[in-house]
Image (cartoon, rainbow, N blue to C red):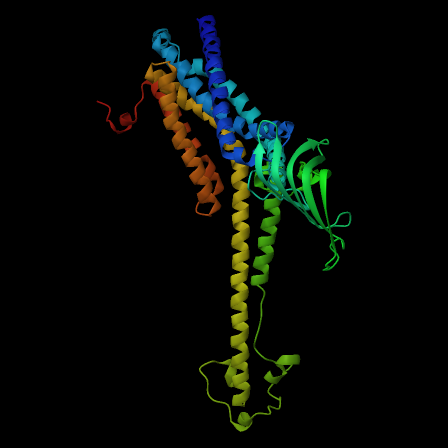
Length: 476
């Protein structure tokens, strides 16, 4: 019997491989298409090298792996256990006295191994890939568009020149009725050039040769250094101009020189930042709790010296005696002028203290939100990989109960479960970022709920236990 169980365990584990691989690569393809649709407009028209585009896609595949693996596990589990139940193999095992949970153990062990590997990948590989992808996106965004002339449209993509071309022959790449404005610099003069025809020749990646035929040139003689009426005008049959295209080339920066965000840091680095933020909060609290007294004494000097009872108040109210106040401190002084100054100064310092407390509260709240955001990312690096185990616990009994091992049923059930899962994860992240709930509950609530549901379903399959049995009295 043990050999039969071991054989069934191995066979059931093998049944997961093909559905898992099929779903994994299908989901990777769909996520990749979504990425390209969202960002294709940033890549077109900038003459970005194909190697850079490929690297950008490869670096973004990292986050797709983390998302696709748990989803593929759920679909594969539903299909494998659904097919197992469909052929009444589970009924045969039950009649032999074999606990259904026993055949699930190898699959659970495999899911734990996948969870550990995915958690390592999410914590070590994914941040570096995100940092490189982010750096490439910034470099691409900063790159100027490639050389792209259009008819009857001014083009100033090349520094120092403005083009206007009336017609472009797409078959021969010839330009007709060309007007060119040349701006002055240290090496060339201001000029206005017109030509009947022209064409472009490439001089490598960094230069472009523009050949103009049958045209005129109006060239100022002062090279742009102040206004002048002196200019030269001449005609030409053929005129060649070499233009520098180095500004249009793609310049790549070092990702390590850019600041890192929560998506580009490992859990250890984020916990170090969280620790420093907690220390800053303690410093802010200590500032707010400092004792500050506005009660005057004889030792007060400087701007507050007029609080002393012996001070000479050069005021018209200096001869007015003190008034009886409902507050204790003003009654300590013999003159109304001193009482008035004390109350004015006390009110000013209280307002300053109130503003200081509001500023400290704002600083603490800002740091708490940053702490929550970092802790959300830390929990996310482990909650999403752990979903591989959760989906085995939940998907195996559900697949057995469905008794259908086809892809359609598995895809339908998976869509419903995964929709609730990702909505829970996204909303939990938002609520945690806004300090409504803790980062732990924001990232682990649905995992915990599915785990409890899966354990209940496994116990029900193994023992026939139902929740209503808890409320049913046993007959005496």
